[in-house]
Image 1 (tube, rainbow over the protein chains, first blue to last red):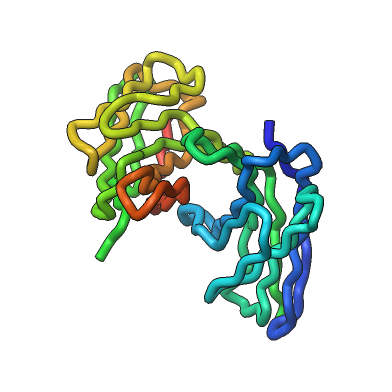
Image 2: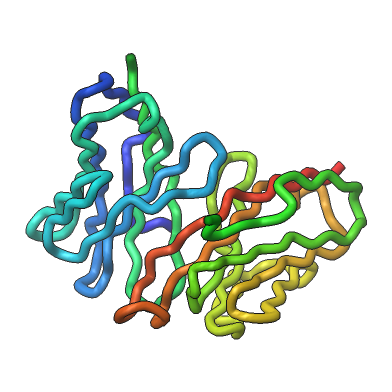
Length: 110
Length: 117
């Protein structure tokens, strides 16, 4: 079973920030938080990952709470092309295994 | 410059047939994977191969046999296809120790939609 809980769906206005929450209250110290998205039926696309510190790349920012029990993926200026299912995954390095949950279906509205 | 590619993109076949799906990655990664995404959109790991060796087999029926002829290829052969095998199959790869340090980040192919009639 997935170790993460996400809201099933969210809407966001185009041009606004999309904040996608993820709960991983049972995360252990050596587990990373990964975010992927799947646009329509394409292959999942890597977005960002982190262990303890907040991370930022050209696609998004990842904010991990100090107790590491939850995180938020931030898409700073959502566009229509960001409409997708977003998956939050918790995994231990070297286990070669992602367990996907049901994700959050983000709809960006014009 | 395709990273992870799969062939075919679509596969329609009859129950009982045997079919193969091919996967290739040109990223120089050590580890490759097969995932299955069913009609309810649940995405589930099937196999992981590291340096051509099977490291994860997630209780997949033995009608499914992965084959890794080299680090860049991981093919999936399915015998005696059943209606329940209809799904989208995704191949993925990750660097393992092939890059600087160790990385688990997985990169997925475009998927193969298998329909069993």
